[in-house]
Image (cartoon, rainbow, N blue to C red; front, side, top):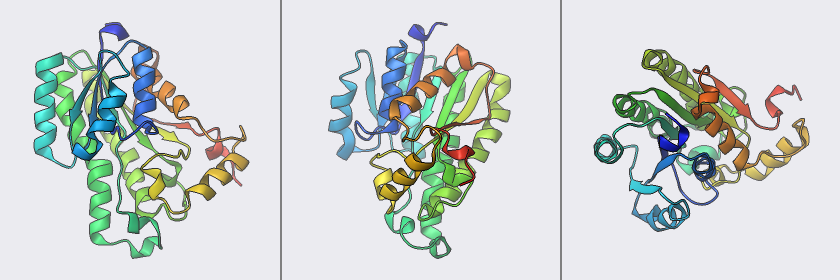
Length: 254
């Protein structure tokens, strides 16, 4: 099946700075049909305005913290598209107060919310998508270096991203026999709506650009291009991996 006949579902569009939007643009350029989801009515108009820029793409509302909304969405996707070939999970959230103080003060509820929305949602979405991925395909999620090393103020999101990367490996093992590949992209810091909740984002961006071998911050389009590669036939032998797209920052000791 060529890319022009394939359908991908993208979760997590908030605005034009979203990594989800950069991925949507690259997949659209590659000829994919796109179903793009946004969380709620507050984000609906901006999402629909963006989606209108991609001929053939359709928008759907889905809050991934709701099993009922996920089930309803996949019923709609099955009716409209039949077969799916790609899933992009660009969803992460922790309460803002959890990203300010010390990690040791993480609340039980903050921990639960971060893992429910940032990690469990990938499991829930993959479980619903797998029966529609009858010809195989790819699932891509987004992670960050704070999963592997301490990034001050990233706090519970770092722990959630570590859980997300482990989830990628376990899902890759479960879904591999169905020819469904599951991978994560570890992107460098990018000024997205979600990232603005991190209190020292400016410091992160500055340090990253100074220390990365390429001496700059990553562009969202570079993350989008990697996602398109992983979902294409070119990525057919890759599963269970975390691919760094961070201008090389992660290879440096200091």
